[in-house]
Image (tube, rainbow, N blue to C red):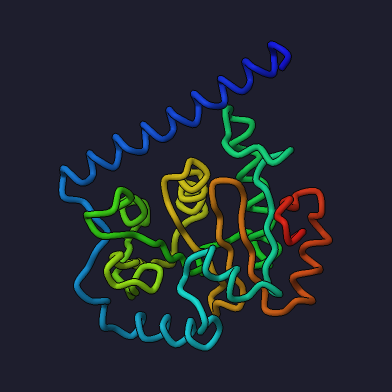
Length: 233
């Protein structure tokens, strides 16, 4: 293997290991302080009932988790990368700007506006036993407990806890998107009627549309951002 390739491989390995160590330290600190994302029961309120009704009418087969949604609705799903050449993590301000540019571009097309304050935001979190406990909830201003479900359909594996909010400013949404890009948060962003969902992750975003036709139109508009996922989407 040529020397530059060896160096690139080593640097990539160290960057990955450092990311893992940083994540573990942050997780241990949250757990030591008693921060987690669990709650005994979801909020009983008009806004909770409205969100539950919207969700059950539009996405009844899945919880608000990107990997679950794309598995249940494969004909309405497309994935875009956040950086050129499928690069996973940003290493400069310019790369963070590019990630935000792509997120904002697709959200603007989905929403039909640059003003995102009417969007729903749902973050996934976990109980204190999970290494990721508390990492999402603390990043969502004004979050309130919505619903929970068994993790991976296994009651012994713990639960997924979903916190919700709306009315966030574009700056607050940008901060969430950057946290997701750094693999420090899980969020699903949805239209006011949840007709479409935007599920950013640390390599781009999964987008779910009301129909395959709308999915294909969005896919064609941003063909140069497409993932190399085996399904070709």
